[in-house]
Image: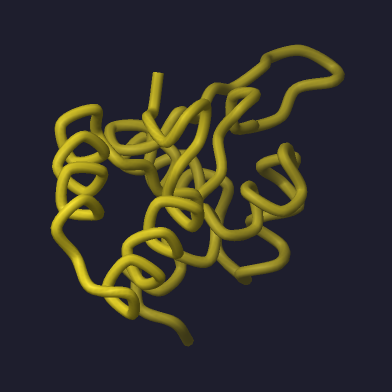
Length: 111
C-alpha cells in the first residue's frame, strides 16, 4: 500500500498524463474509497490547477496548459543569465545557452 503522499504524487502524475479521470476509476486504481480520492483532490487542488466537473460526465481534470514537469525562468532570472553570457567564457556560454533553452518559453519567460 502506498503512503498518502505517494498516492497523491501518483494522482497528479496520472492527471498530467491523462488530463482527466473519473474519481471512481482513481479509487479503483488505488484500491481506496471515493471519499479518499476526493480528499486527495481537495488537497492537491491547493497546489495544482485541478478542477472537478459534476454530472454524468463528471471527472477531475487539470487545466489546459498545465504541465507537471515544465519549469520556467522568471523575467529577472532570464535577464541575469543573458547578462552573464556577455562576460562568460566559451564553455560557460554554451552552458548558459542550454539553461536558457531548457527552461525558456515565450522568449525564456513564463508569461
